[in-house]
Image 1 (tube, rainbow, N blue to C red):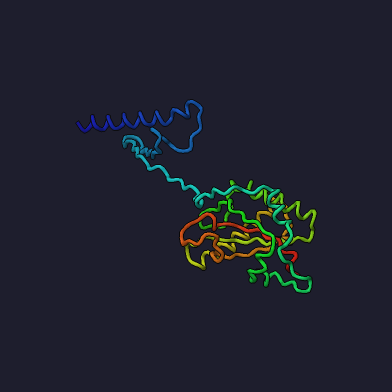
Image 2: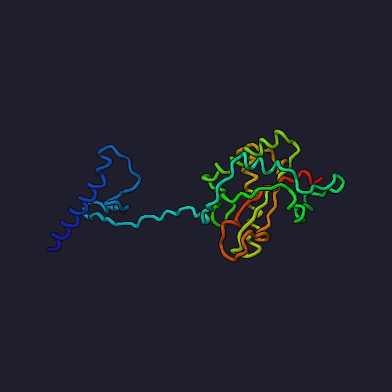
Length: 232
């Protein structure tokens, strides 16, 4: 009886080994033994000691998590260009212009500068990374800035990062700053926009478009603001 069981086990192992070897015999490459769609571990203990076949768990593949997708349409390059080239609502006299640092702290000056909100870029969740799938949207921004700088070489663009109210004030502040900088870096490295033409700032959840403590795609945005008529 014991001999029969041992023979049956060896026979089952032989069937499995034959199934595993089949792809190689047929000339197909494989990275690990697979039987019935599952990876297995085959251990040969040498002559007379038998073969052990153990089924392994399939590895879990982590998919990149992206924040709730924004349904907002991406503005065209022409729309972005037109918004940024619009005249300022009330530009100060040249002698009354302020430093960039002061401009960032003056909401009344920010409101007067021509701007456009970009709400369609979907960042990785809780990250400043801009996935490759979003590069087409960034290209629209790059095209608009390239045209603008060709006609107005002295243009200065402030890239503002904004978050929704989910999370702490501190984490949202840090995240908004990182996302603004991430967009600038991508515009410089991938699309050739000169670094000197752009400044960045993060406002966290300070300027919500929709007053809610919950996740809302309207609040997660970057704002482009032309500030050359306001700063020294």
